[in-house]
Amino acid sequence: MTREKAGNGLVKIKKYANRRLYNTRASAYVTLEDLAQMVKQGEDFVVNDAKTGEDITHSVLTQIIFEQETKGTNLMPINFLRQLIRFYGDSMQSLVPSYLEISLQRLADEQNRLREQMTRALGAPYEVIDEQVRRNMELFKEAVSMFAPLKPAEGGAQHRPPPGPARSDDEISALKDQLAAIQAQLDRMTGDKK
Image 1 (tube, helix red, strand yellow):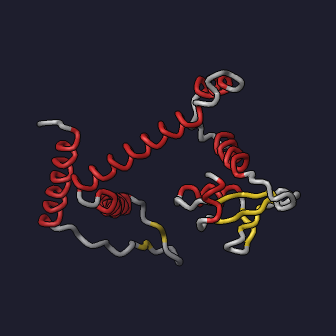
Image 2: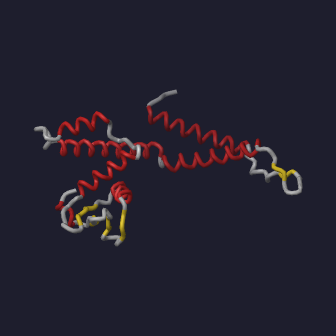
Image 3: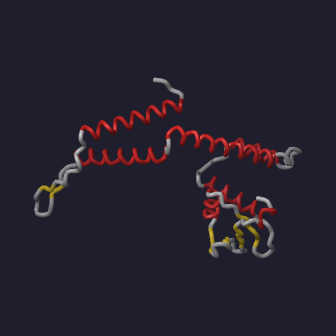
């Protein structure tokens, strides 16, 4: 984040001496996790020391990365971290930030391109997969309920749960056709020919 962008609609965050962060747009205190979510949503912000006005965005973003890494989400391999440390004070130090920025932008561009290809190939892949997962869970629950032991009702009488909707052969056939269509789309995407 550059200082030139600070006046262009960036969210301004103030960091106080007690380490609390204050979002001036929302008029609310925020956490590092809140700031991480803002970054993930593409919302840029600048963090200034509340007392001095100094731009401390870099150190706060670094702190967010540190927090994520300590939670067990190790995105940066050890060899990468060692090499990065070696660059500090090295003659190549000035080239590293721009190289990393370009590399990460290329990675993000490739990720977006892959998502677009999947969407074109499958239509709306996430919705299709979510719907199929939901249907599979319903079928699984029905199957489990058929094998569940009967629970005695009050007074010692056996109580059977009301039967679920029966699946007709047409519904099962339709599900099989949908699975075959999804498999064919996946095969086309991965280049497998069966």
